[in-house]
Length: 419
Ligand SMILES: [Fe+2]
Ligand SMILES: [Fe+2]
Image (tube, rainbow, N blue to C red; front, side, top):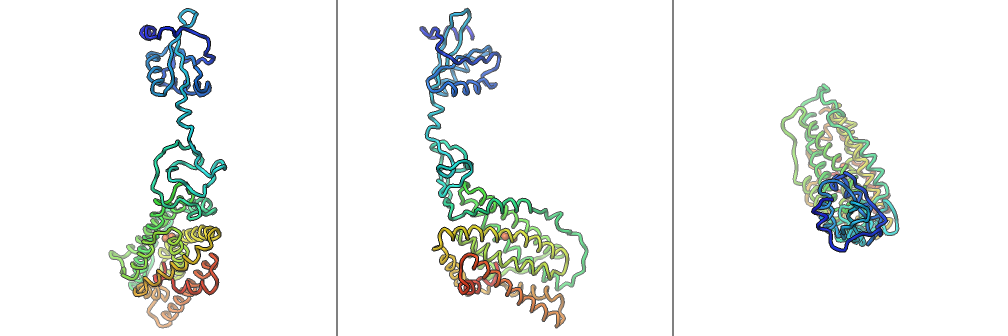
């Protein structure tokens, strides 16, 4: 201790042996980690109890006084009986323990570790599940705060699968493969890709919007939606690259197609949006993508459709999983889902739905040429596709507890735009 410090020693603060804890810092500077040792020693000592601190680092006395003032601990200067026996005595002021006195554990009440609460208070904010949160943290503006509205027990598994299944558009597709293709068929492929891109864009925007509204307490769901958005980003990339492989200009985008997608993008309710998008729209798209893969006129088109379809299967699986769980808790929510389909159908009644150019392009691609027999085959294949789409939708609706008759009615009301 410095001479100055000795002069500062308050009168009467002589000695004692009452401090049973001694912290010998020796030459360790206070800022070099000395404070960490002192914090630990004070915690061990407990409220109101002293810790004796000795040390030879320059400025230790000043550092100790300043720190004690800031942290609310009492500082005393004491002289021992033995020669040169001067030291600082710090009494635990309890500020640290008081600060955490009203702290709460982020998670389900009474449960430990990583448990998910039924309701996530907005004041939990961004704190990790299982963390202890200081009282008085700011409230975040999350809208989706109830487990029943978002949760699926399958979310963690689906997220892991999704991460493991990520592919690189650069290497997953052999962009340089040479192939011959008739001009009209290439135009048809470009029109189909143009249509797919705008649908994939809706499929990217919708989960992204809900990520920002979801309480991050439901971490796995947030992660599933984040990877889903990343999947759609890749789909947009590969469909764009295929469209531009041999053409400088893309195909047509129509009022009917965009009006249909706008009803999805504008849907404010997470459960209804994921019902319309994932269960019905992406479910229908699964059939479409496998159809494109099957009748693709070239290996690049087949590859982009196949890779996208594999991802879409996960998007559909998650939509079904969390809606099934939601409905098992709140069966009265089912009629609202049915109403959402009817409302969307009414809103789109006066639009064309799927643009005729897309339908024509699918037919020509499935035919492979203008030959009459080929066109008849293409037409049959397209009719078969719409039947498969309908069957798929009915099957998924029934998995969500709709009756046979309801599933038939609701599937028929699904947008003609497919998504
Ligand atoms: Fe997609
Ligand atoms: Fe998707």
